[in-house]
Image (cartoon, rainbow, N blue to C red):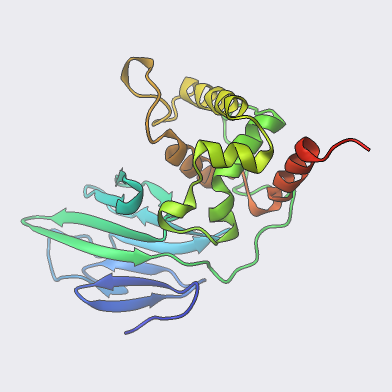
Length: 242
């Protein structure tokens, strides 16, 4: 099955493309939407790809198998363990998993789900997550600017995350100010046990911006409804007083 068109999401396996439709869960396993193999070591329904709140999510439904999720052009790799889930925000993603002696690789091209975003001010995901720290407006802006292209659906691959200099310029901030706010956010998240904010010995993790965006999207820390804050902040910092 061939998928095409702007924003289309599809799964590719051994040269075949399988379209993924918003509102319809897509299962990967040995008895699933995509049956990769009749392998008794593989769960009948191992992975689930579905849309939620304007994002595509990958969930591991298994009890003992893990999957390695890689966005090669960003240098990002994560392990999705049993019961875990993550947003697919990187455009084209490779998913590798082993069941018994056999290793499989599935490619996912994640476009924009054709669903309406939640209105501004809507709480997503039920009760407030315990242990999530409070952020100042400027700290939230530092996170929001990193996720802007993903939230707007016009960033894929390496263009999905701006450099620190680009992020600072987008807000009308100095690079020093942006880095300071980013440090503050990462420190707060590191203190509550969020992984990827720092490397060993307190050294800042090189991929912390990627981890931060993943965390912010998965917890609803930032959403499309927050995007007008970016233009307002830029105007406030760049327009001369009258």
